[in-house]
Length: 474
Ligand code: AMP
Ligand code: ZN
Image (cartoon, rainbow, N blue to C red; front, side):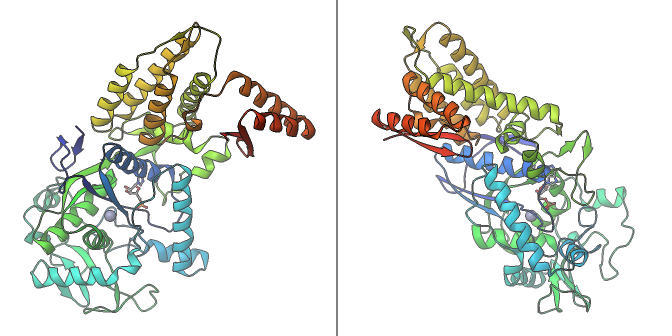
């Protein structure tokens, strides 16, 4: 039984979907004005691990990750969505490019990085700019129901009208008023904490649309509410994001969606704690961020970074250092070497290695709010046991073990390893592969081809890939 920590109830809860066997999952996606960094990837990996876990438990997952290509202002994180510059436009001005060109370029780059680190494709990745009409419709509904008001072509959500405002973050209107004052609140707002749903565009603003109120652009928060409703319905099972999304973004999403539909918006809120670099906060705007390419250029595999994420629980703060990345690489190599050894026949007497305890430990850990460090320990403990056994015996149930490792490491944790279809490679074949690798290093292509033919006669075809020889049974 899967338990998930819900930020709203501040408790671990047993996961029960709205519709048996099906799960709707919404993830706040990237603001595409720059490359995504390893902090963003940490939050996306949590969503991916959740998706993979749910899939492995037999659920059919419909997942959405939006592309924010408009309306996210530079000060949104602190304020109420009406101050600062549009992040897309700022970058477009700096680069002397069209904002759409910037957005499509970084969207493509983000998707490529996600593929490299083995994040499953979302069912849909809707762009904010292609859903302006859904946002307008939701804003109209909020005005009709008297939760929002328009002044001078700007529309704001009136948070005083929504009693539950603050339930997710603790930032109720009362607490906000005690704690802080906005330095420069928008002059059209009734209350400084009301947040923007639609803003009238200044004359030279590039990304703008017709609306019943002004030629303008939507606030950042409304895009997720509108797209979540359009693709997944009024109430969804799970919504994920990084911890910085809790306030104001997700608090605002709850207010908008609940007031527009009159129904509960999200059943489980899942938030990933921040990744720090050498103990410091990293953000695109501060420029102190590493991308996946920065990591792979230093000779690490995307799987090494994925392993590093898995080594800490998503609800604990993670500090990125190259020392910890080296440890992650070692863990990945240990698993890979163990698998290779398990696939190689040895001369010792066979023995059965019971893996039930390791399997149970893995399943229990993953079901306990995705406790990946504990799940990984069970895999590493199994690897130790396999290696110890292989020193003096061969393992009669190696196929069963390989199938478990394939499922747990590759499918559930998403770490790419070479399992080779769970086939045990005979020692003789391995020997020929090694000889062929040496021949190729020596540029002895005649010998390399002869060895390929030899393998063919023994029932194997071999392909030369950038990561080495790939063996397939014919
Ligand atoms: P953004 O493109 O800034 O809107 O961020 C996209 C997603 O990445 C959001 O869910 C953020 O909460 C998350 N995120 C941003 N920075 C970090 C970080 N340093 N650690 C973990 N998640 C982050
Ligand atoms: Zn969002």
